[in-house]
Image (cartoon, rainbow, N blue to C red; front, side):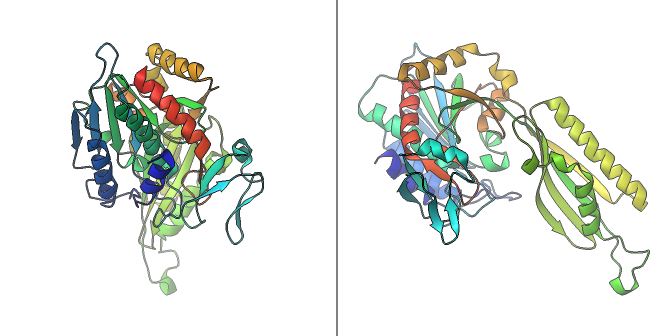
Length: 397
């Protein structure tokens, strides 16, 4: 199978990560793809292979002991922001004209200027009803294509550890990995974005759960008595600075993002994520949220709003700066292949954001996947093929 064939197979599996699930892997459907990857890796005769209860697949291929062993990672789950069921992927030769996804829905340079970088390339799009799943099944296909080429052609390589994770989209993938099992000295996530981007900097991330206890009274007799929890949650949200919302921020600007609401008169809950490239700044946003809640509670007259925070991951740059040898390695690979690259401060997180603080420094390399998490997602097939060459060289190093 080609890298395209692999990709089309992987996106046919529904693997949406489900926030708040109480199962080991958030969506049991993920295990179907995990079993497929287990079979594909077993066919390449690894020295070690395992799958844990979370569905994480880990395969080791022993190689040249004089070279440091590395891990190559991609995640099998997809975002819950858009349906990933029954993905209908198709290939288009992009000629600069808007690509029709469905009636009244077009992928065009007007809305997505970076599409012009794919002029003359084959791109993979959806029918406009689902996301594509390139985040991160493009990374999976790239890794498997490079690995298959090396193993089947008996090319000398370093010790390789291939890890396909689950629940990256809800920040749990690194927690599903045992550092005792992962024996590599460092790794690379192959996960989304422009193929020229090397990400050594990510958000520091926190979750914020806003719980509101209302006072429900029959609406016909509620004057000066009812405290509508839904209205209190709306009030809290509107009191946070509007300019600190994702739709108004870019580059290294921080934000609050309200991702889910459950509410009625008696009680309400809002799920937020807080993102900043600086830990100190993230903590300032947390303090601002606490102050906002206190002011509203004081005005209402009781503790209607309760906030719960959890750290999800930190900016991986703190750890990667300690390992210039990794930078030297990937810079050498890009130079050898004549591929210009640039550093990107990724406005998100990768598995490496957490693994780097677990003793496995892990920068991220792009895949050629764009507009992730939505119906306008597309993958540049030509860029994917370039990344197969990059990953293959890293496997040899």
